[in-house]
Image (cartoon, rainbow, N blue to C red; front, side, top):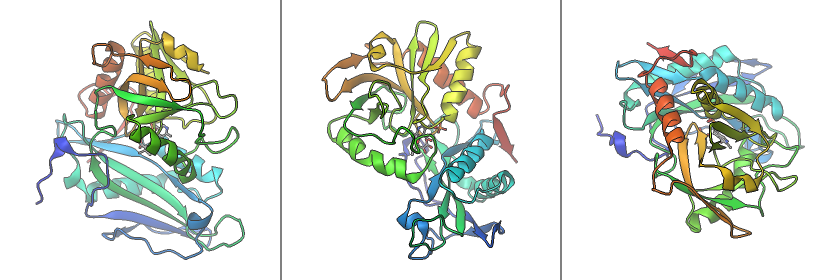
Length: 339
Ligand code: PLP
Ligand code: COI
């Protein structure tokens, strides 16, 4: 068996033994197929290649100290995948199909689930693509749903150490009435240029601003944004951001800590009023932010003056991780245990 440096894993592709696939043909989903191939063979005119009929998910499975495997809030991801498919006119994988495919691919790749306590997890990447040919701009008639998995470390190489983020105003990841609220590939294509520039300029990711008024915070690259002000957890409410399952969980945890939770428009200027700010998502988990620089105006917002994450972000991070790894009671039934 290969030696894996579980504590030093990057967030990236990792070849495992199997992936699972299912085809939608003649108006119905077929049986789940298991394969070791990392490739898919599709038609040259498949709509995913031409018209962006592609939606994906990101979720994690954890191994606890008790040896058990837990998947975090799978049903939320499965429903969001359905919503994304609906948004770009693709066939929706039924919840039961999603669940069965997920359980099978986790069990088949069990040896690649990282041990607990190292900040690593088995990342699950479900995706649905239009495979049927079209040349006119129309939805496909045939689809393919797949899940591949791989062990990953933190999305930002800083892990839970604070990162620098850049506000961009000259790029929008999505349009006001566009597809920002669903998880489709096109949104990520639109984010590549500003994200690449931000990295070259020394930042971990970008902070997108609302595309309509250019006044409010949308989200932090591949993660939602939150700010802490006194006893309040504040996070943007916007049609152009992805409804993050991590953020939804943190809102619940913050409320359980006795905090006020506000989901509303967050004007850029309010950044000066927060004591702590961070990015949250499946891949990013809770990533504290130490510095936000507005690329256009040069304005700088600074946090974590001692170089460390603030107390609220730390408590949110630790509680979330403890629930996911089975160290703390899962009082909302967020985990599915896979035996
Ligand atoms: N926003 C974007 C654009 C994302 O890609 C993700 C990742 O899925 C998130 C936010 C965080 O969502 P979640 O917490 O459900 O992973
Ligand atoms: C996730 O957090 O799972 C994501 O999908 C974000 C990113 C890697 C696209």
